[in-house]
Amino acid sequence: MPCVADWLNNPFSIVQGIFGERRPGDSDWEKKVTEYFKEKLKENNATNWVPSLNDVPVHYLKPNSLVKFRCMVQDMFDPEFYMGVYETVDPNTNARVLHFGKYRDVAECGPQQEIDLNSSQTVTSERQTFYCVPVPGESAWVKEAYISASQARVSPSTSYTPSRHKRSYEEDEDMVPGSGGDIHGYVEPKRLETEASAGHHLISPNCSPPLDLNFPLPGEKGPACLVKVYESWESFKVNDVLEVYGILSVDPVLSILNNEERDNSALDPMECMDTAEEQRVHSPPASLVPRIHVILAHKLQHINPLLPACLNEEESKTFVSNFMSELSPVRAELLGFLTHALLGDSLAAEYLILHLISTVYARRDVLPLGKFTVNLSGCPRNSIFTEHIYRIIQQLVPASYRLQMTIENMNHSRFIPHKDYTANRLVTGVLQLASNTSLVVDETQLEQGQLDTTGVHNVTALGNLITWQKVDYDFNYHQMEFPCNINVLITSEGRSLLPSDCQVHLQPQIIPPNMEEYMNSLLTAVLPSVLNKFRIYLSLLRLLDYSISDEVTKAVEEDFVEMRKNDPESITADDLHRTLLVARFLSLSAGQTTLSRERWLRAKQLEALRKARLQQQKCVNGNEL
Image 1: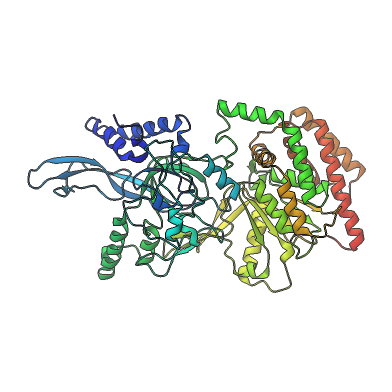
Image 2: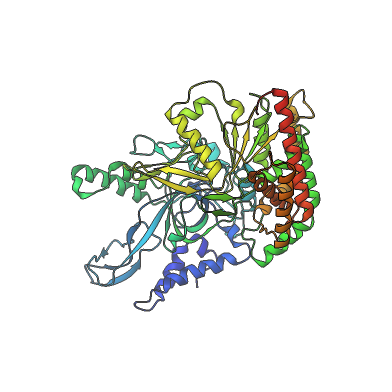
């Protein structure tokens, strides 16, 4: 039997063993491979032993070893055919050997062997390729928590010489190989940047112009990977967040083959139907865009490393019930923390909590239920206030992005992903985000100026995202609707130009003489353990189920009829919908999964305070906010 470390360092030996034991014509060996690795990863935190491409540069990983990758599906390429089983023959002795082609980019063939393409034993199979990128806008605390949980041993790979990018020898010396062969031995990399640390564009050998790694957000770091999926690929879609476990392929032969293919197709265009641009995008050098041949893949419910990955398991239920028992003080501390961040405004802090735990829980026809976009108006113009509010949100949620709404950004940024038919790929845009990302739109940056056609399209796309929780990707001849679940917070001076579900006008109770100092001291004063409780609180409450009993529904309807009688002018169906939303998130924020009469009354009270504040501001300004 293979030794313990083999399944990590040399998974092919395991696959070969299972393949070799199969009976003729038996296709069950593939299921046995998946089951073997599934069982191995269940053992004793074994998932922490597997090196992650999110944490470790590709040239520190052993080629053909087992790796994992936490990623978002940015694009899906066309399915490809490969030789699932093939036969080689030795021309001298006529000896024949069967091989498996699964999990490989290049067919294995000994020096005295040739592949028999006409063999009756050949099995042609199909696999799907996903182009995957790290989760856009993933917070630094998330990355750090995953790195500190890792027990993977990594040391510089000696099997091939990688093309290094902006990496000095000194940086490489920071990594000292671990002593001994113990699988648990862990040497922590000193915050190693990944291969793609230079940003979106990387100059690849024999490739001009530079390769665009197609990250949705500017300034993102991390590897992009071609993820080859063999089973159940139809259950995944673009923008899904996955964790994949598979065999790392960085074979330099891939780059040589691709360059030869390009050279040959230039001589004879009929040889290859793909354009040179398509070949470049779909077959980039493996040192820049490694391949992962997936053995196991699953969609992630969330990316918060402080929570159990799946909340339905028995062990997770204990974690949830323990946390729920201490929910009340956590909520009170979070409210206090956000009140300080919002300059003493506790009402705005209440609404910010409700916003941060909101999520689209269902869709009725085209209407997304549960979205709760808040417009925080009354923010100081062009001040660093919004920047600091964003920094605090960044510390609380697993993924976020601050969109500065300047004329320049609106006119020149690419918001909407579009299909490039020449390269046969989906070119990304800022609005290609994973589910549950917090998007902070900073409208205080908006100055006078003219929006051009791109600017108008971008503003329209933002409005559609807020109203319908969907982005219409541009496929040139038609648009394709991609539903999303993005929490949008708009900070503005007056009422936002964009639609929102709820406008809260900020009423600062304190004006700090030095905003920078005040905000920084807030973050340094909060204990890391308390900050972690806030992070668990906000992620966990989004995942809870919620219901309203028939009895409470009836009471709410009667109450609403009374409200309409007393004030028919200002109470509308929208008010009922919004108050029900506030009541929903208010209940969940207290750990209650059903609506009680007390929470309904508290929701009405909050809404009355919010509206009174808007009315007061309207009178002061003499015009509508």
